[in-house]
Amino acid sequence: MGQIRLVWFLFLCLLVHEGLAKGVLGLACNWGLQSTHPLPPNIVVRLLKDNGFNKVKLFEADTGALKALGRSGIQVMVGIPNDMLASLASAVGNAEAWVKQNVSYYISTHGTDIRSVAIGNEPFLHSYKDMFVRTTLPALENIQAALIKAGLGKQVKVTIPLNADVYQTDSGLPSGGNFRPELLDLMTKIIKFLQDNGGFITINIYPFLSLQADPSFPKEYAFFNNTASPLVDGSIVYTNVYDANFDTLISALEKNGFGRMPIVVGEVGWPTDGDPNGNIDNAKRFNQALISRIIQGQGSPKRRTPPDVYIFSLLDEDHKSTLPGNFERHWGVFKYDGSVKYPLDMGNGRALVPAKGVKYLAKQWCVMSPSASSSDPNTLAQSITYACENADCTSLGYGSSCGNLDAQSNASYAFNSYFQTMNQSKEACSFNNLATITNVDPSKPPCRFEIMIDTRKQKAARTPFKSSASKMEGIFAALVVVLGLVICGVH
Image (cartoon, rainbow, N blue to C red):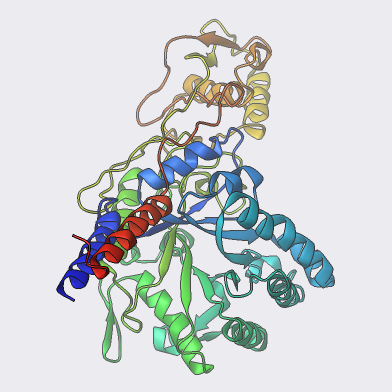
């Protein structure tokens, strides 16, 4: 018996070491795909693994991403966009076809570890004006029925990512939390359905947006390690808005009989540009404290058990809608090309690891020609507008990293952004003869004039490592053999 215990002890040690060697025992993040020049999926998967992420959320069932995630050891939550809800709600056959094509296929053919399906994305936002109120629950029910029919009802769970505006507190305290009156009946039905089918609630919490939307919001309260005045709610003291927001949801669930409902934080993070509060220092401060909480297994005052937390986001996305604000394209912990924006301790002193194998276009930029005439300001303004309508100029805004450029550099940034987006086509650096191509980097820190990824020459790199799952299978198999020898008395 002593020998058997020893073998099991060694096995447990190997399990723990496998996690600790990564520096973390499980980080999760969002992988957005709204980029003009996305990184090849295999490079992104390598980036995830190198930095200890073992769970990822996709906003859509992207073929390249789902294939690359196959047999990677990374658990996947795959999303369904809001514009598909009506179709999925209208007929269970549509849901069955979607599950077959986007879940069953990748699990069986590519070994993708799909663990959950996210129906819609914040479908009950105030700004959507009830557009998805009638279709979300039927779509949820039909996807669940389709998963059961496909034999995946126990393996793949369902959820609905919700914005924190689905609940509120009239008292201003977390203990006063409840769902919005117009959504109370629907939310109760949704949560009951999720509970009955082993699903979970997914909530998106954004301290940055609380700060950005309200000029009187106490800035320090948006951060975890702060000097803000705490919020006292009975016997509970809240030192940051994240915990207060999360516990407002807990109170809403408790009031409606769902106090033990599982919760996942689907999105939380801080942008690095596009807003006066969106900068490197604030993002580093917020995300480092967030990661430290995750690693330490810290929950909230009302729920000590920590939820899964999906950091938003892995990479910047230069084609994302800027309707909420210019900061929307700058949520990434990494830049668009997988390079590191700022240092983070990912656990046990492990630093962020940049993407490997990224190919770039030539080291050349498009800038306003020194000889260009400014006698026709209308032509220059029209050229800049055209460039920024077709490329990303969000870093030029007030309080952003390129917000203090002079007029000529401002034009150059716009021209170069368009030039890079158009794959450095010579015709893309004309602008009525106002621009010219240069080999001298025009960047003026903190403003960077980027060079785009060369997606035309980029090859999907083979992953030169075995997945954690594969390695653990090998370890387990070896230990089973050793255990068998011990039991049989072979020395």
